[in-house]
Length: 138
Image (cartoon, helix red, strand yellow):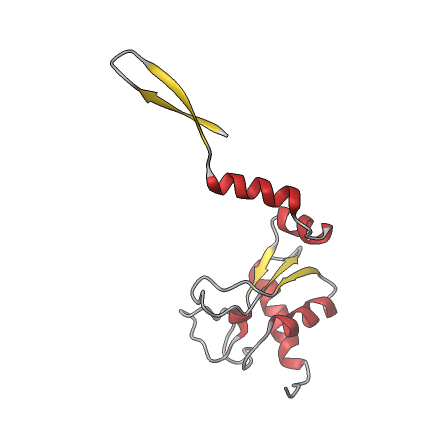
């Protein structure tokens, strides 16, 4: 809870308590959350965020693809990317209901990846491994 200063008249100043709804929700979430410890730790650290859109061959660079067409695949999913990230030996957490900022209506999910390399190097590594992985039928 914070306070707002209100000037009533020329020299009268009064402190009025003010409840910030977003701050109250965060505090409630922090106490009542059942998110496991690994996810909480991954969110606290500055991890690399990996979106499936980075690897989608149907998207242009301006729409969010980050790899060359030669390394992109059709219809990447957070599950496929998770399997590749785990095979690379990187710690990661999947957030399946997350939506890319350019497409808030499409909840593709995202990955939080703990890496030692730069983000572009990590994305290229994942893209190469995705291209090598066998295609699975739905």
